[in-house]
Length: 319
Length: 281
Image 1 (spheres, each protein chain N blue to C red):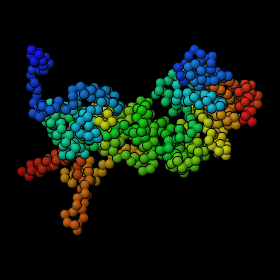
Image 2: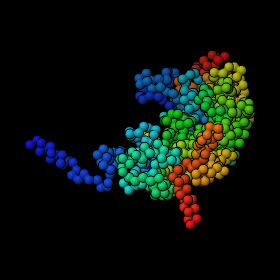
Image 3: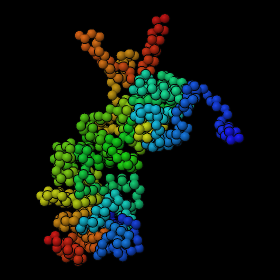
Image 4: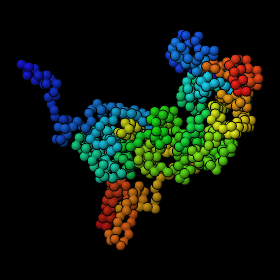
């Protein structure tokens, strides 16, 4: 009698049809919710992202969840990605511009295990791109979302260690100390000595940290077609740059903002001199010879694409 | 024609819950702490007007409410009641007065940055020890949207010369400066934005006598050359005598006497002022 009652209650509350509306891998069906995080948490992240989009450059606190990766390894970006992805999305994950770096591969594995969505290395084929350190070389479009992993969300941390005070400074748009920091860097180093995380003013209101992207990529944030979302899991903050937003780096009239780009250097693989290059030292094959520095495109998929195009042109030209 | 630049009316500041006995049990002749509810009266019903180019001295013992009054005028502390009117005076007349206490935080900060300059008793409150001396002075210029490093450095060097600091030490660490020099750095920083009112909070306290004399000479010279309007807080009647044309004596948060400095010093009327003057002499 009691067993029947329990069974009736279970039948009432348990959904009869457990077949998912789309295909998941077998493992995700049994172990995980779609995109690992529970639906309420994802909804909260999305709500905070909407607020961030409404206030470009403003740091919005959110309840950063525990994930099966350590804080500081991209948990902020991962939560934003997981809150956004849908089964029809195509995802690209890069780290240091590279699709095959350890962090990128591990993040991709986790997302694949818990969503089953397709992945790509082609920037233009992706609908959501999760990245750290770089913005892809190819121009992104309005239908794409770029999610950046952020290690240090507040640009004022360099000059004001107290979070309450820094929050007040943001509220009152009091950025004089950051300007003094830039002035001091010019005085001491002869130029702005900020290599990455270059501070910018968003829509003339909020000062924003650009995450560890190089100065080369900062200009891509200005009036971009794409939605940029920033997630800092350890600091529990999200912020955003909506499409067509003014993003101006801090600069002086006599010391304008410059990038580290040098057209004299070209990629050793594809020959491009209009991309951000990384340098690696290659040991010489014999101990008597000296090794040399090689510069290659930081965005590996773009480099491969250019190489393929070059080869294609060569073969079609030859035929 | 009225020539006031700053007018304070009915200004009060109390710390505590307040009760119906506060007004009768606290006052200049009693304690400033209510024995019933424990509320401390820092400033009570303060009135004064500060004319353009004038130096008004506020004198009183420790805990008399001088610095609280200064902080309220500096818009760093909210008042419980009262008004602090500010009026721009131009060549052809004066603008409509604005009540500074009704400004929102954003407007208050920009007013403080553009129109007020403050020199604190303790240099570490006014000088950021993590930046160079030049950086500290430049902060005010950067706040005023100066965005040319060359011009900022020129103006900073000029301000350093004006305050008798060696301009060649523009990039030095403030830790390498003496107490008197740090006070000069604060003065240079306060003057950077051409403030309408300079607030001086016990600027010579903690300095030895010769350095005190140098700083006082500097302030006197600046007042003479720039015709600065100053509000000077001190517990030292000697400082007040040297700098202020008018003086206000405070006790337990109340103003007990005010008038011309000479008159206050030579013919004090209130017993507390008489005590202050006799102990100074």
